[in-house]
Length: 59
Image 1 (spheres, rainbow, N blue to C red):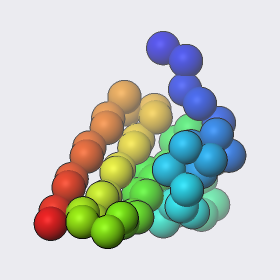
Image 2 (image 1 turned 45 degrees about the vertical axis):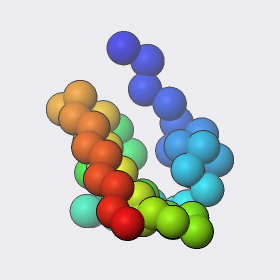
Image 3 (image 1 turned 120 degrees about the horizontal axis):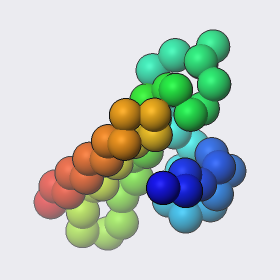
């Protein structure tokens, strides 16, 4: 599995991620991107090392 770089994810989601631990390298950290449009609030959590991805959408 190819994991995108952090800057690529920032570009895709248009938001700076909240990181669980700033001292960990990107690949081993847990990143949460939060952004919204006119109708929904999106929260995307990614843990590359553990191959975890979570998407939450709220009105």
